[in-house]
Length: 134
Image 1 (cartoon, rainbow, N blue to C red):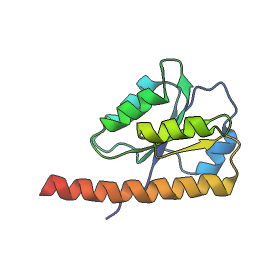
Image 2 (tube, rainbow, N blue to C red):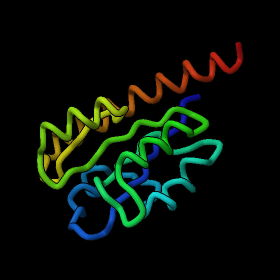
Image 3 (tube, rainbow, N blue to C red):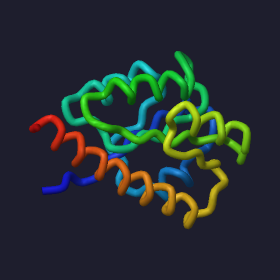
Image 4 (cartoon, rainbow, N blue to C red):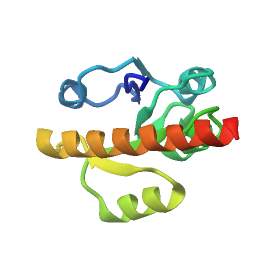
């Protein structure tokens, strides 16, 4: 049986990201630091998706990607930038982020990113489970 897709927001709290939260719907948790994100990502069943701000008091989106890479099950990370930035998008993708969205992104774009990331991570987890059994 497929798990319900859950997500965590890693946001520094300096900006108004309430519209992003509304667009995401069922968020498991919201944290303000990489250390708090690590708590979620070290669980046996970590969140499927992590939406991370570009900078937090104790690190950056790079650190969140490293934490996600060490999670016991696959996790997709989506970087949340204040503004659309193509250079940051390319860098984030090259470093392993699933996507980058701007806080000003329209609801359809956020939903598209969310659905794509969710479908991808569910498939990756199914493959991971098969490999663990084999």
